[in-house]
Image: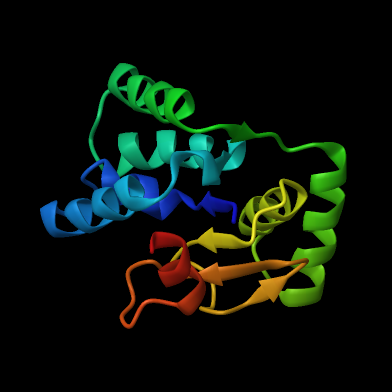
Length: 147
């Protein structure tokens, strides 16, 4: 089963919002089979901004963090097809365009889950179910993936 990360998971893993969130995010990331996880390129751009604006990191440090994530997990691109589907998704479900791009990219990459706390838990579109990895009890699909 393939999963995509939303920005908040990586931001928490970088220490945004404190050590407790960081530890939970890092534990989750470590327990996922590495070959199962992907990062939409949109997430890397958002992460860069979060690390600078909210995390107070320098642009160089934010760049280093972004490159580290890129080297750890495959990055999925935003193709013209992803963008068109995202526009439809945003219009049909009143989502922000950049959230829709992330969900659309996850679908295009064959993901079954999008790990995020920014969407409604359980929202499913084009084969991708949004799961909040920080909620308890853990969603059954995420539980199955983690073993």
